[in-house]
Image (cartoon, rainbow, N blue to C red):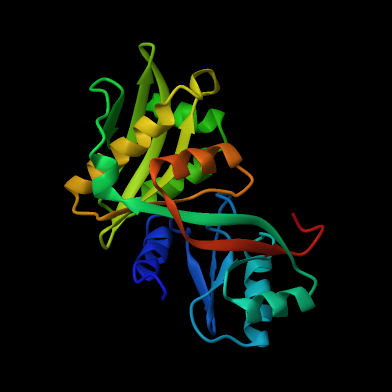
Length: 243
């Protein structure tokens, strides 16, 4: 039986990490990335679509000066087949993981280990930028609607990690979790995720969810140990040579 939470989780994933703008082509919706990566710069199905909609989405991608990229969820076999017939190939399988906020928030977080604040401090933006979360991705956080907050992690009396969390319809989505290299594998990522759950509980959220590349085996193992389970999975479809 399908999990009734999944539609709300998928809706929160989109709402809390929004594209710069959107364009519709029949049952497909394309996001404008503005340099912020594939999640906001891809096309996904939002209703019944036709082959002509795929062509229109490709045209929109080209008009925005970004590679044609489609985000296809497990179970959307017809779309995957249609894209495959046009030379697209699947890349970067990405599970969306979820856990109950109450269970996560029941675990304590050190008083001086993690903090919630908005807007982010310059040191958080620096931690993000030194990872893979530059100004374009940070702009996604800035335009996400409230309620939202940033996370600041502290270790050895230094700012050591940063994250972003926002709530949509009782689902909190954790994005942009970054721990500085010198502080990894010391529990700060877990502390930041738990702090996100504490904040989310105060906002009335019941579920904390996040997306993580399947290639990131260390992160997948960490989240599994915390009680996260897979709610959905998507892959990007891209034509070779258009990266």
